Image (cartoon, rainbow, N blue to C red):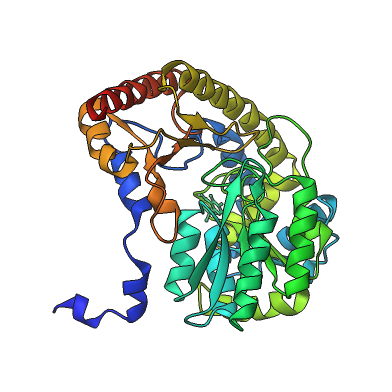
Length: 403
Ligand SMILES: Cc1ncc(COP(=O)(O)O)c(C=O)c1O
C-alpha cells in the first residue's frame, strides 16, 4: 500500500517534525545535546513515587486501574481549582479540566476553536509543538515578534488592525508568557495589561500557556493573564516540568461553558487521562511534594542556567547575543550575520559532537536562521561548559572561514 497517496491534506500542512529529529540527535552518547527541552531526571522523586503508589493501591485497590471521569478525578480537579485560585485566578472545579499534558490541552482547544484557514496569532519565535498542533488543524499564522520583554504590544496591535482591515477575525492569540519556549523571555506586568487591553479591543481571546511559570530562579512573578482577565483567557498548564512528563498530565482553566465543550471533545481524544497518574499527582500535590520537587528543581536549573551563561560569555564569538532567562529551560542566541544555524547543525554534530535547536523550526515561515535555542535543563552542569566550548569553537572557525 502506498500510504502517502492516502494521507489527508492536514498531514501536508503539518510538515516535518523538527522536534522529533532533534530528539533523535540527543540519543547518541558522545553528543552533548542542548536540542531537546527535557527536564533533568534527577529532579524526579523516585522513592516518594514508589511510596505514594503503594499507598494508593492499598487505599483504593483496582479502581485506580480503571477508566476515570472524562474531565478528571474529583480530588485532582478540586486541587487544581484551589491552586488556580491561589495563583490569582479564582476558579471552580467546573472551570478546570484535566488533560493528558499541556500539548494535548492545546490540541483540544484547537479542535474546538479552529476551522481550516482560521488565523491564529503567535508570538515568534514560537513553541514548535504548538505550531505543529495548530498546523494540524490547518490554522494559518500571523507572527508577532518578541523582544526581551516578550510579545511587543504595538506589533500585536498592527497585526490585529491589519486583520480587521481585511475583515479577517483571528481566532486567538497564543502566548507562553513566562520563560517562553524557545526564547526564555518573560512578558512584563505592564505589557500583560497592555496586551489584554488590545486583545479585548479587537475581541480576540488569549491562550496563556504557563508550562514553565513555576520554575522561577529570581525576581517577582508578574500576574497570570488569566488572573487579569479570567473571562477572555484560556489558561493551559502542565505537570511535566514540575512533577514529571512520563505521567502525562496537564490542565485547562477557562470559563465553564468552554470547559464543557472541551470535555465533549476530550471524549473523542482519549476518554480520560491516566487514572492512576491522576491519583499519583493528587497524592504528590496534597502532601506538598510537588512544591518540594519544584523548589529543588529550581535550584538545579538555576545552577545550570548560570553555567550556561558563564560558558556563553567565555566561549561564544564577539557579536553573538543571548537572552538571560530568569527561569525555565532555555536561552535564545542570536549570532552575527552570515551564520546559518540550520546549515551548521550537521557539522556541529559530526565534528563537534554538540547539538542545538536551529532557529527556523520556531518560526511559522521558517525564517530565523541566525538564531539557535539552547536548553540547559537536561545536560549536567559540567557538560554544559564543555558543550558550549565546542560550539563556540565551531562558530569562531565558521566565522573566520566565511570572512
Ligand atoms: C511551552 C510549552 N507548553 C507546553 C508543553 C507541554 O508539555 P507536555 O505536553 O509534556 O505537558 C511544553 C513542553 O515542552 C512547552 O514547552
